[in-house]
Length: 123
Image 1 (spheres, rainbow, N blue to C red):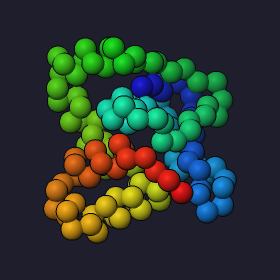
Image 2 (image 1 turned 60 degrees about the vertical axis):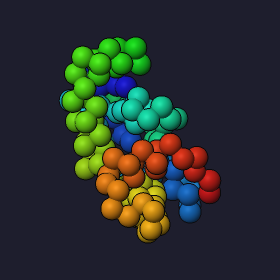
Image 3 (image 1 turned 90 degrees about the vertical axis):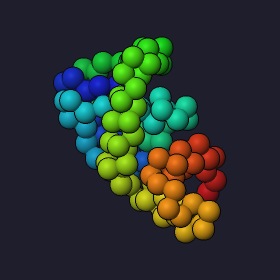
Image 4 (image 1 turned 30 degrees about the horizontal axis):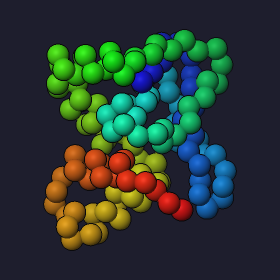
């Protein structure tokens, strides 16, 4: 997981219809990325590129586990950030598709996102 200390980074995802990278947001000092990989143990869901000179801080998986053991509310806060901030078309499509399945209706964001980020996506 990385924290932007200085500079601007872009977050790009692949537009499956056009097979092109699509910028979905910019990250500024104080922002972070890589939390999905840390929380769900999955490959990255986007590409983050520096637009200029940037300074990043890296949190290793070992440090993440140490911190979340000592401060379990950190995981909850990161998940809440994912639920409220990740609004790219692919994430919204996957979430809406899962919520249409009767079994997944009314199970809450935590379970929906757990399923969504641990399934293997095929296009």
